[in-house]
Amino acid sequence: MPVLTASDVVVEYRGRPPLRAVDGVSLAIAAGEVVALVGESGCGKSSLARAVVGIERLGSGSVKFGSDEVPVLGIRRRPLALTGMQMVFQDPNSSLNPRRRVGDQIADGVRAAVLRGDAGSDPAEWLERVGLDPTAARRYPHEFSGGQKQRIAIARALAARPRMLVADEPISALDASTQTSVAALMRSLCLEAGAGMLFISHDLSVVRRIADRTLVMYCGRIVESGHTESIWQNPVHPYTRALLAAIPVPDGAGRLPITPLEADRLTWTEKIPDALERTAS
Ligand SMILES: Nc1ncnc2c1ncn2[C@@H]1O[C@H](COP(=O)(O)OP(=O)(O)OP(=O)(O)O)[C@@H](O)[C@H]1O
Image (tube, rainbow, N blue to C red; front, side, top):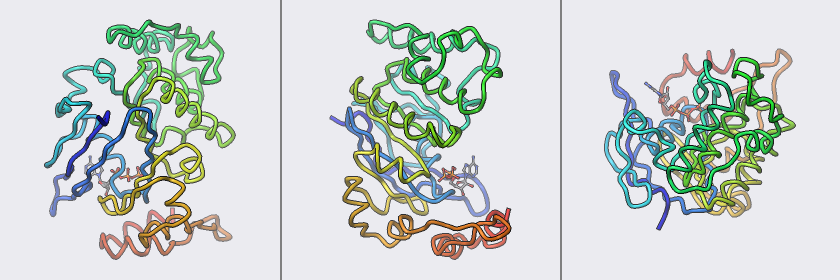
């Protein structure tokens, strides 16, 4: 049985007209499987990630964690860790409490794992596993750089021994030299624990290295999915081909040109001025 199953998930945001950020997405992730979710900025990846962990209300559809329905806004009613689900956000400040010592926050994860029957582990060991000194346990989040904070957030999530880890751009705050190693570590710790992982990233080279399967999202829908290597070798959907081919080169002023991919999306969303401003900034 898959550890996570999403069926026909729709996420809409209020507005005139309402914005359908996720438009009928279905997916299943097995224990011990790493599935990447890729797609241009704004295509709905984070909305889908929040929906599957229960912190975004579903317009329609359903999400199951094992055989249990994921309760809407479940994070408020019971901490994700107690359900065996964990999420790592792009911004580590969203995952860490600034007023609590790092070691205590990792210990929360360990305690959640123990409550679910795990033998327990030492918070300092988790810090070492993500490449930080164990003495970091005594310090507070503001004493660390963004990349270090993200490693702490990852350690905290993994210390809870999740059965499912949803990681939304977990490596973008890290410096380039550690991105691949931290992603590989996340993969190996998930596999070791028999957990499933949904890994959202803009970094396609990292995705290629760590994901068993890849889902390609475009305008709220999954337009292509399959084994990562077969998608790379033989992308079928035009959007996937554009995504794999799009390597924007900055102009003399350091601005990124509009790629064919973005031009395509501009027509679809009809938000040309907004997107042009974004591209130029
Ligand atoms: N809380 C919200 N209220 C209204 N609109 C939102 C909200 N969150 C996201 N959106 C809109 O929904 C669409 C999808 O956003 P989402 O953050 O899910 O995309 P994404 O693919 O994760 O983008 P990125 O890669 O930049 O994080 C975007 O048009 C975004 O502006």
